[in-house]
Length: 516
Image (tube, rainbow, N blue to C red):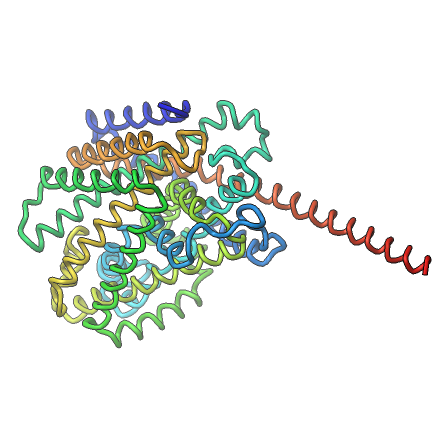
């Protein structure tokens, strides 16, 4: 295959070995990976909390620093996509189908199954359930994506480096090192995290769509049906990938944002509208007020609370880190031509606010049903939680069907985006990887997803993703340092040039005065 590098083969061999391991000994894979995941959460929980806050502080600093006006591209370049399309693509790639289900399942879990601080079902637990959902899906997550995407966009579009994770570390380690084995190992880690993460999501997503269809129409809820869903989705995202990023992902992202907001608006109108507005306002205030307390909370003296933090907050922070190569590369690709300040403002705050709105409407609608004793939503499986909520409101059938469509499109855009990113990493950072390479990665991810669904190895592979996040977190730290070094040199060089020009101009003016 043209332009394919050794990273492709390294990652492919590792992924095949992992799938074989999960197929032959799924219990062993899950047991060993769970032990490692538990150890990481307990031993490095403090590290993850401090790290994510450092990324967030770095983003805020860059927005208002002298680096804010640096363009992610050449000085005369315009953005490739309109602002609304850019926002839609950010959101579709960054959160995807998980948003549709976790917006009901997470607040319900925090309120009735496993509250972060209070007794299940109490008013305090219900009040904090939405606050912690905001916390987990808000600007902390987008700060991780923002750092990775910013650094990649800067080095690719402004400096002309290859679109590779390893290339961004050249100012620190040198070109020879990053073009050699150390750089290949870094890129292989990024490919591995992307393949396993997206394959897990595809396997999980097919189960969710199957669960929704079974709940609504009584279709079989089994592996054969999930395999059929995977096959249809694979065909669709391959067609989308073939059409290119400027068509397939762009159009699907716009369509999905429109449908997603239609679903949101309908539920807002037919649901507990006033309760949603009151809870959103109160929760937003609680989120802002308790921002630093939640951000640094570890509960070292309370084993039960610490377990909750490990299972939720630490898990989420590691999850966002592990997804950052995939989402970061994609965001970088669609953000060419924007300034650092514009980029970070958009990436940090707009998707986070959209997440808050979705959680408020869906989450409060779910809480309202359980609070009033209409149905025990907390007893539903994740696959059917949203559908269980929607059935209790007017236009429930319409909204449930629309939900399946939205999830399906998110399914396709996530896979499409991933094939593009994997294609870049496999072809030395090409921003237009060959269709053949993208299709091979798409088929590989779908095959892995099918095996995951059949053998029930999802948890083991998700654990592997969390494990991969630990070394990659160090890579992100180095990326931030590399960006600062390169951008600082650029700004200082520009300042010296400006100062030199001013001195020359002043000398010329002085000479003219003397002559006159």
